Every structure is written in structure tokens, then in C-alpha cells.
Length: 486
Ligand code: URP
Ligand code: ZN
Ligand code: ZN
Ligand code: ZN
Image (cartoon, rainbow, N blue to C red; front, side, top):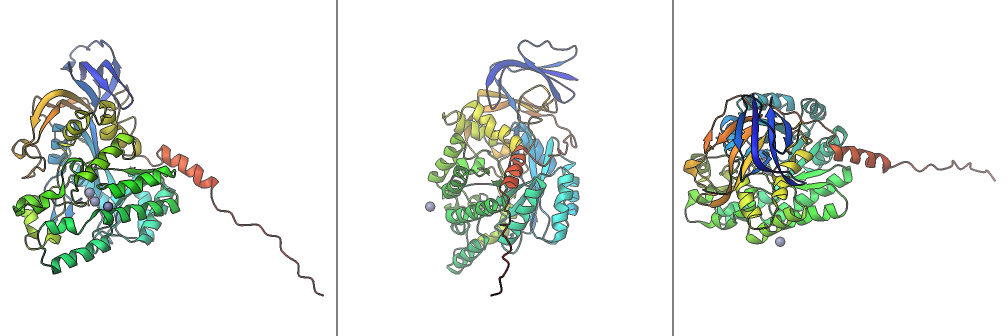
């Protein structure tokens, strides 16, 4: 079964050009002007539209057990929702409980992932340490995992200390896998939470007050310094504030490979919502780090423009109102997480490209290509080129859409972008060479998604390994002094 995308402008991270795209057997066979449609081929009209690599969201939590409940989005609904938004692959977090075997947890997540309707892959979290964990990290790498996440927050649950960061980062370096950090000082957050509760602040505003920007910046900076000491690249997930971004900029200025990932939510939504009188409204926006002020949003956009931040994700982690109400009397019990996997591309296009902040090529870089490169998926993903997977989005830059919970494809009963009218929408989404979203309708098949293996030692790691070897410390050779007896 072949498919021809005809009459569009191909937009890759490096350039744009008029071309048709021929797909067959799930891959792109040819990209060029005036391609002929093979007999029986389906033809997709891309006239007046951009043909871009499907988005990749490297930060999601489908059906994740967390804070005494389970995220209500599963791999089937989550990947369906993402296709309706023009994203064709996600990387989800497998999170072993402390003391749990990493490979047992990966088995569990792999089983859950089999429901997916589009391609997916896994990071694995390091939530405790032992020789067995170090050994199992290698087994995870053999199973196609090339990134390990570390929570510096969630004290008493997922949080790890500096000793574990050091040991795990060192192990990542030796395995050619990328360490990721959720950067918030978990001790400081815990103490601030206690103070606020003692002051009688029990509502969602306490969530924002207990996680100020400097708590994030301190942890980002600490993780960066540990990565530098160890000699390994680092990726800071959900970078939400100017000061954490500044830490990443400083590190990059001094020659370190540190990557920063703002979320679509943090780019456009601000913290005023936590002070809303309507508890449900405020609680539905509770996530960590919290939404920030306009000053921080500006810094994140500046980073995407200048290249000091590379990837826009969502951290899609869905909790319905009933679940949020677990924290009715105590903000520390509100399950942390918000959605956005379906809205990410629209929001970044609308506020990025339509405002002149980003070129369409830079849009492709931050929503797909950079992610594919960092996670060693490129050029299988992240580019429209012969030989790449046929994961495409046909983007109509003129069409308008008003974001509504009632019309989205997620299981969430709220949408944090409710009521926002955007210009620029996915007209058609193509996954593995098949049209899965067209004219506002999904055509998906449960189980169609593949678990995509990501090999270790991405190019940056090969360079880092050479550098580490050249700068390895050596003992000072000293001549043995023979003592003269007088
Ligand atoms: O609030 C959030 N971000 N929930 C998901 C877990 C995490 O910290 O990424
Ligand atoms: Zn996190
Ligand atoms: Zn500040
Ligand atoms: Zn997350």
C-alpha cells in the first residue's frame, strides 16, 4: 500500500522546498518534485500546506501510578490524542518503585505500551541505587533504552540524593546513555510545604508558593555541576524558569552538552491560575514545576530562538477532577500533572511561528528534529527524507481552531488551553505511512504502535568518550629517592 503526499512544501529543520512525498511499507521512498502516484496509491492533497516530520513528544506519563492514584490517560487514548494533534511518537517514562527491579518495571510498561496506536519508546527512571540497579541499567540499554531519568524532587517517594546522582550519571556515561533530571530541590520543597500548611495555606496557591523558581534553579545547577564532574551530557526536563535556563546557558557557554526542555504549558500559561477562587480550576493546573510569570515565559521563548533550549515537550500526565480532589484539604496531596499532548504543536506554532519568534524550520527543530537527534532516533525520525519512517504531518498554516475539552481526544475532563483560538492546525497526520487523522476524524488501530529501540552512544556520546579518555587523570610518576646514610 503506497501513499503520495502531493503539492505541499516540505519543511525540515534545515530548509524548506516544494516536493511531493511518496511513502510505502511504512517508510518514505522518495521526496521530489512531481512524483508519479503508483497504481492504487492513495493521494493526499497538501496544496497550500506544509509537510513536516510528525512531532515527537519526549516527555509523557501514560497510565502512570503516582501520588496514590493512576494517570487516567492510557497508551491507546494518549497516542490517539497525540495523532489528532500532529505528533506521531512519544517517549514515556518507565518508573520503577524504589527497591523494584528496573527490568520488571520495564516489562510492565512494555506490556501497557502494547495498546498504543502509534510509535513510542521508554526512558527508565533511577529511583534507588544498588549494584543490581547498575547492572540492570545495562539490560535496559540492551532493550533499546538510552536515557535514564532522576527525580530531585518528590521527597520520600521518587527523590534521589547527590550520591545516587553521581553514581548513576557515571553509569550513564559508561553505557552511553543520557541522564535526565527533574530539577527541583526536594528538601526545600518539603520544608516550604510544611511552613505553608502551618500558616493555614492549604489550597493550590500553596503548590506554587512551595516550588519557587530558585528551588528549580538550585537543582538544575547542582545536576549540571555533577554531570560536569562526571563527564557526561545532561538533559533537564520541564525547564520552566529563567534561573534554571540561565544555569543551562552558563553550562553551554563553558562547553558542556546540557539540553533544556520547556513544556508547551510553561511557554504560554502563567501562575495566576493558582490564585483562582474556583478550587477545581486552580487544582486542575497543579503540576511540577508550576506555571510561572510572563518574565519566565519570555526567557523560555528566547532560549528556543537562540538555541540554548532545544526541545518542547508536554509532560502529559492526566488526572481528572475527581483525582485532583484527593488534595481538597491539602495541596500536597493534589496529584501533580497536566495534559497537552494534542495541543503542543498548535500552541508552539501559534505563539512561536505566527508571532515571528520561530521560523517554520525552527518549529520543526524544537518539536521533532532536535529530539530525534538527542535521543539517537535521527534520521529514522525527525526528518522528511527518503529512508525515514513515514510519520508526517500536513500542516495548514491558515486554518483556525478553538481548543475545547469537549472536542479533544484525551480522556481528560479539563483542557488547560480551554478557549484558546489558534491559527495553524494539522490537516492530515500520517503514521507508518497510513492516514490516521484527516478532516477532523481519527482512523487508528489499537496495537499498531511499535516500541522503538534507541541505541546507546548517540554522536554526542562518542565525542564525549574521546574527550574523557584524553583528559583522564594520570598518576604523577616520581623517581624513588634512595636514602643516603651519612
Ligand atoms: O507534575 C508533574 N510534572 N507530574 C508528572 C511527574 C513529573 O514530575 O514529571
Ligand atoms: Zn518531573
Ligand atoms: Zn529570580
Ligand atoms: Zn514528567
